[in-house]
Image 1 (tube, one colour):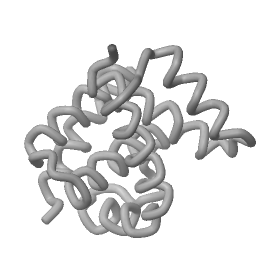
Image 2: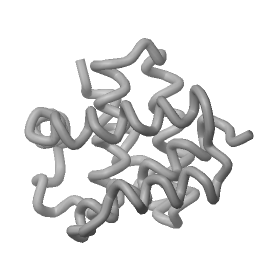
Image 3: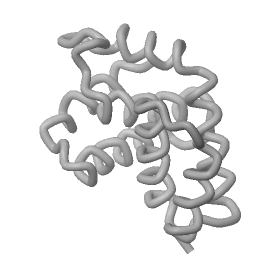
Image 4: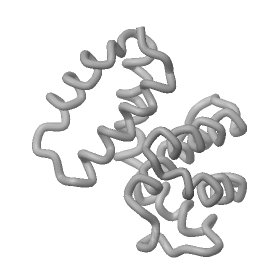
Amino acid sequence: MATIHVARETLVSLLYAVELGTDDLSSLTDELLAEHKIRNKQKKFVEDILSGVTENIEFLDSMIASSSTDRSLKDIGILEKIILRIAIYEIYFTKVDKPVVINEAIELTRDFGINEASKFINGVLDNIK
């Protein structure tokens, strides 16, 4: 059974596919959930966050833009934006504690090889009210 962290990694991959304009998100979702053995609560988590982020993208991007002190939205990399969208969605729409969300977001930046972004992501998320 997958951990919640693996579920978040899968979310990043799925949202990246959305950014690239995937034609069949449903099949890709099913494939990645099966590949990573994401079932039950973690599966529901992925499905809920995926739909929540895609449905609230304008709100999430506005929060990123207003909380970023040194970069405009267009200057933020795709993976950084995706990680921030997931984290901000969790802060506003779930019961996960903000420090846990921030820690997970920083871990995701490391998992996806964008270590230099962890300070920026931490700063943006700290500014979220």
